[in-house]
Structures are given as structure tokens and as C-alpha cells.
Image (tube, rainbow, N blue to C red; front, top):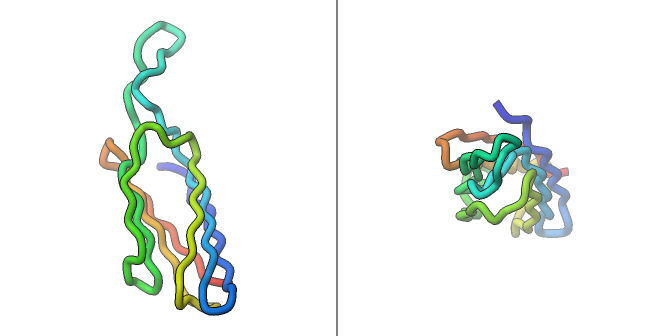
Length: 103
């Protein structure tokens, strides 16, 4: 299991700025290990965000995204106390969901 995402959501007037740091190795499938064998591809393919249970963003990612990716976005209509949840899915079928409150 991977480490939890670090999510910070800060209210800014009638919106919230959300910053997320995800823990994932993000292998491209093109790098070789010490023995010269290709390291298999392992990367996040889908990321979605929800605000109080309603999906507000969905993205598709590929192997070009860096290790431990950082994501920042704004949610209109968010206020302090609201819940923001993020879910990612990778090419091996693993998923992770974490949640934070807007402060």
C-alpha cells in the first residue's frame, strides 16, 4: 500500500485552493535496473477529485508524469468545513482515496 496523499485545501473567498502531493513511484517502463532489465511500467492513469461527494475534476495521466506528483487546482463554491476527496488509479489496478476538509 502506498503512503497517504498530502492534501491541503484552503478557502479563498467563494472558492478553495487545493494542493495535493501524491506518493507514487511513476515508472515509465523505459528505465533499466542494475542488472540491465527493463523496470516494468507503473504509473497513475486516472485522478479524480470530488467536493462534498460530487465529482469536480477527472484527469487522465500517463508515464511522463514525475515521481510523487504534485497537483494544484481551484474549486468554485467551496467553503471552510467542506470535504475534498481525491482518488487515483494506476496501470496495475491499484487505487487510493484520501480526504481533507477545507480550512
